[in-house]
Amino acid sequence: MEKVQGEMEIERWERSEEISDAEKKVIQETWSRVYANCEDVGVSILIRFFVNFPSAKQYFSQFKHMEDPLEMERSLQLRKHARRVMTAINTVVENLNDSEKVSSVLALVGKAHALKHKVEPIYFKKLTGVMLEVIAEEYANDFTPEAHSAWTKMKTLIYTHVTAAYKESHRDPQT
Ligand code: HEM
Image 1 (cartoon, helix red, strand yellow):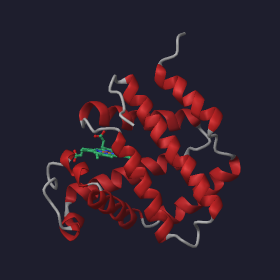
Image 2 (cartoon, helix red, strand yellow):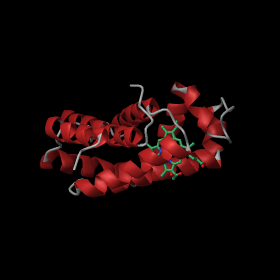
Image 3 (cartoon, protein in one colour):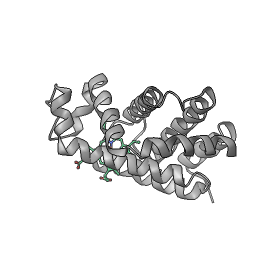
Image 4 (tube, helix red, strand yellow):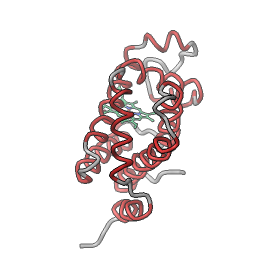
């Protein structure tokens, strides 16, 4: 059967950026500490994301006009999205050995954001970048150079799968 563009991109990614077993273990170990503080870390990531990239707030009806990070922190819509982001990443991390599960979780996220929420895909690159920054700062002791390079591959994995779903949904990412 003919492959669609998204599938070809994932295959290319699998060849060039494969996460080794040792790297999967490092990701799972750092993440277990991060996820123990799921709520706080998730909210910190999202607040920094919206402060650094204010245009990303446009998609959220309840805080698109908020400027004050303390006010954002109290927004239920922000807290709910933080929880959803963290839960989805947790499913990916828990299933790093099951590439079909990883693809299906991230394809669902990609499709919903492409078609329902109509989010420009470039924001996924920015959000995963901020995620890495916050984790590296807050868990500096765990964030060895090995962890950093493993998480950089994880960031690429998320972005590649999500943008592949955008392509399948016929919304081309503007990278
Ligand atoms: C790794 C990154 C992300 C993950 C895992 C994620 C996950 C989710 C999930 C699971 C939902 C709810 C289910 C659904 O409606 O399909 C959701 C809703 C939503 N997401 Fe994301 N998301 C991510 C990034 C983003 C980004 C970058 C934006 C915009 C800048 C965004 C905007 C939204 C909006 C507007 C909603 C609906 C919110 C609501 O109804 O209150 N998401 N997200």
